[in-house]
Length: 204
Image (cartoon, rainbow, N blue to C red):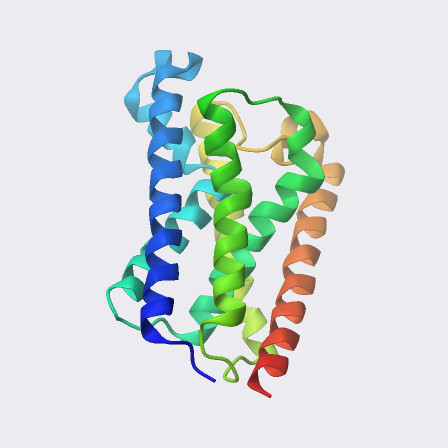
């Protein structure tokens, strides 16, 4: 049964608000941090180099569209669910133990890696329409991490720092780097298969 439009728009507005607030605060904290010495332009480039930032930004824009009563194509909505889900999963499994955020940074971290992923995934599953997703769309969806990989390597070349430790090519060496890339790619494949299965289940 389709979700009530007021419930859908309320969920979308809350998700967009949390994403926007977390993104804005993260950007301001970055500008105040040690990396700001390199200048606003370099800090902004580093900010936009994180998949976390890009996936939260994409979810924010899609939810603004939904909150305004517009629609989002099912494959796009599912691709966003996949990307924001991978954001949370990779952070929990591989990154959260590498630092101990505190104060305002803790709240921003929680919003970007936990709050927005959980809110969006629940809304996608329970409120958005289902039944049109095709597993073969994975080929197009995988272009997203592929394009991001190229972007991350460009950011690393310009700033001298890769967005994530598992993308530090020079430190890791080519073999380990490629293994990490394949691991992340496998997460996307498994994640898309899971979303496809949930879409078929919700259709019934």
